[in-house]
Image (cartoon, rainbow, N blue to C red; front, side, top):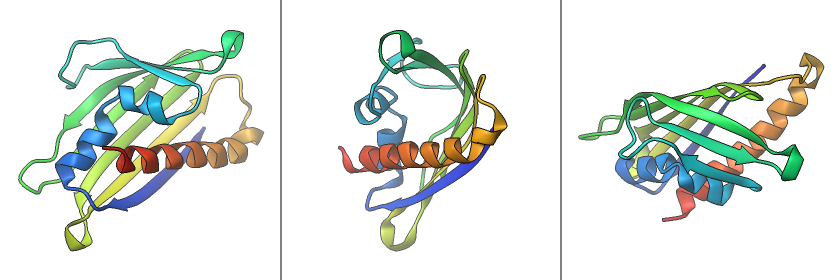
Length: 146
């Protein structure tokens, strides 16, 4: 199991940063070899379920997630979303927060606990570095794309 946190600032309003980070299908556009399918009807709320299918052919797996906390930003108040990862291979949780930042910017905090089934703990440092790199690039891309 690994826990990591990413922080970014973006020249976006709270609402726009939130939208870019929580339109789940967009994650499939920025994470290599991944397709995201939202299982439940819109709009996103507590109970929304989506699946990220990652990999190639027989080496692909589903990362099933459920939104368990959904507090969009409002009136310059921060927003927070928590996802529970409930796949057969990937377990854990992720929290996405948007906060008012300096100079009218938005501060984004992505905090995640990640467990990969069958991956022994000696691989945790490699998993942490890989996850920080992949999710860091994904967050950067999501925040840059309208």
